[in-house]
Amino acid sequence: MNKDDRNTLTTYVLPQEDGLMVKDIIYGRLDLSRGLLRRMKRGGGVYLNGKRDFITRRVTAGDELKIVFYDEPTTMEPQNIPLDIVFEDDYLLAINKPAGMAVHPTGAYQEGTLANAIAYYWQTIGIRTKVRLVHRIDKDTSGLVLVAKEPYSLHGLLQQLSDGKLAREYLALVEGHPSPSQGMIEAPIGRSLDHGVKRAIQAQGKWAQTYYETIRFGKKYSLLRVRLGSGRTHQIRVHMASIGHPLVGDPLYNKPIPQAVGQVLHAWRLTFSHPRTHQVIRLWCPVPKNVITMLQQGI
Image (cartoon, rainbow, N blue to C red; front, side, top):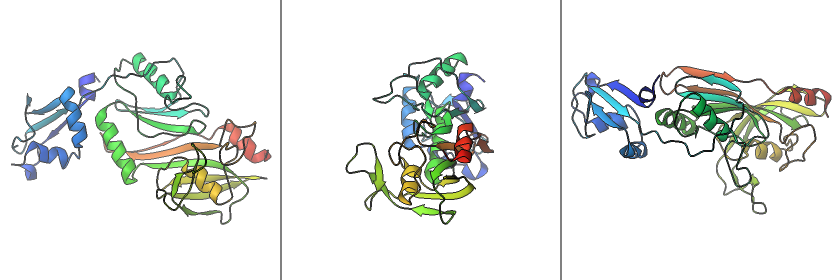
């Protein structure tokens, strides 16, 4: 697929859309944001039957409507870091990120991040586009990270994320044996008042919901399957600590251990509707071996 195809969305005016304006279809059936359309002024555009046109133009059933999105080049420094690719097609990339790697440059981590590695990978496959992370996981959390190769797929996936239709499941190794063995934690999370990085349960915080299920007991630890009902910073870490079962090795909400890079948390599964094909995509990656070893030995 060439660059133009990747950054183009082609559709045809439906019989029930006869007489509407182009913008009615763009903001209606195609559910594009006004921000996405504004960015197209720097490049791209809207084409009706092959000719660039205005979004106020009236359409006729059967008309071809083509939207060419503006594709921003990356400003990320490319670095040759191997990627564990779980899924890839013309529009999306899913990577199994190792624990200890930041997803993007921050004040403390300017190099060696997942975004730097993806920028290099874009070069190797001939894509001149920015790194579009659909979601993020903490530096010491391992597992699936989803990346969009073009603006339209990013827009669709962010909408699914906002609507709770992009399902994220984690495996977490926690202290002790939760009782009950499965349940739902619903408690608002906000910034800790005495620590710049930590989060805490706060009445004035943002609503947060976490579902957990114990799938295996060890001597001292339990392996949980965790599903997010919301997506707050450090959500699983804060919620599990709040019920007395903090994540093993968590340097902020528990104590570090030498057998783990940080908190033992693995982004295990992703389920979503492909923004282009509308096919349901289910991705997973196995839990790191050291997690099973810690569970069995109860280190």
